Length: 267
Figure 1 (cartoon, rainbow, N blue to C red):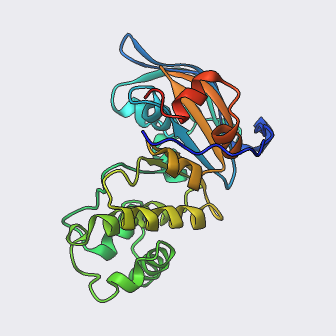
Figure 2 (cartoon, rainbow, N blue to C red):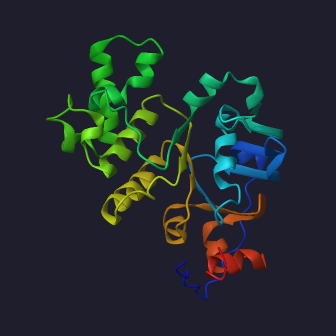
């Protein structure tokens, strides 16, 4: 792991209150059968900010992310404690409705290969009953422009979504996610399969998207977390070790384990 340079500037801690949070977890523990993957995580995720989840492999980062839109239950997991979305316990929200409002972008780009680029963007809207072709076309164009893909694909909108490059596919998947107008976007290592140029485009896009959406990103890339996030949460062995504003985490962490991980001494 590359070391993050530490400056002499001392940044003050900036905690997020529950009142500021769009998503809050309270004593969140997650399980796969009898195996416990998360231990009593308390974390407030602020609106219109980017929160990075960092930590070594197997520390519970992706499990935490999947809990936030109940995807953890889809793969057979369970959880205890509570997760609040806009103050409401997500157990009381229909999972389909929740996933419209809390969208997800996965590690590997997953466009629908049998659908055109245009239809990939509006697939969720069609699934939810929208049939107005003119409106669907407008929404597709609007969201392809938001992710900076329109000029690259506008002459080939009927081609398969799988026919474009990996970086373009990932931006297409982000367009598909935001077409449903979510409040929160979860990103699980969205650039790990991409080259540096495509990665830079996704990072620039994240910066733009936070003006409209709250973003939670899991990343193994410390430089990426430092570049794109406003807040950073460090997980280790299923526990939240430290959570603070990103500049504080990367320059003056309060916890020794955090400092050792950031500086590349383990992980």
